Image (cartoon, rainbow, N blue to C red; front, top):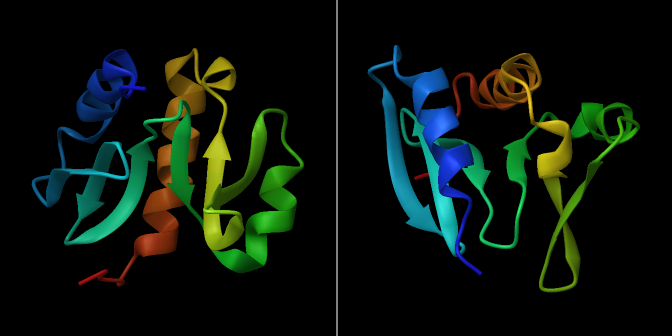
Length: 110
């Protein structure tokens, strides 16, 4: 399954003002990185992968359409999968991007 290009375009628009943002194809989707740290990714399986503070994961998955990210049968600590159905307005998308940005402040993935 190809990633949702419309969601990718919305993320591009949301992050356009930040010159530190780069894009990278990964996991069958498209990741958005800030200073090399992945913040969010449009999943190739549908939805939005969002990095989060692991201490907030239980609180964040209480929201409708949000689950812990599972890859190859195991949960990824500090990663969520947000259903595209709860991202239909820009304010919702912006709030999830902010979660990812907060989790990556001062972090580099390389």
